[in-house]
Length: 136
Image (cartoon, rainbow, N blue to C red; front, side, top):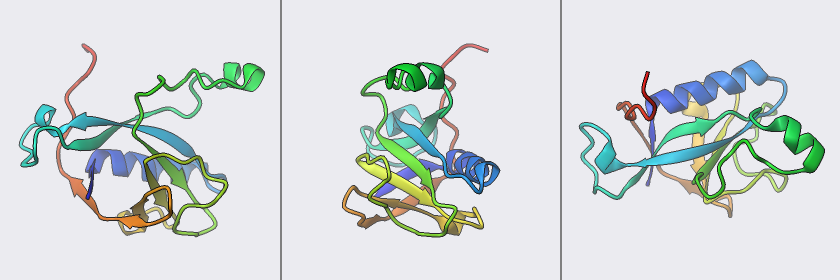
């Protein structure tokens, strides 16, 4: 079972829609269930809650070939949009332990999770908000 917040799903689908006809690849991070309000899951259960903007650090990446926009070792998954409509992991996709894939029309029922071997995983979308990480 893979857990993700509804807010993250909605944001990823909106970003995919905005990028169409291009695809997007976005690094995703988790929060432990114990850090989320009103979640009835074991405390150490990872819940996908956050993303790193795909354009962050792109100048350095273009020149040096290094991704400095995503902190090393801090992402547990990846979101990939497939505007051509293929639901699954492609051999050209950036792989991660969990890969979320979305296809047009960019709605919740067109959003799924896979492992590196392209095996579909069960997804549960949670109606919770992650804690604020930075002071306002």
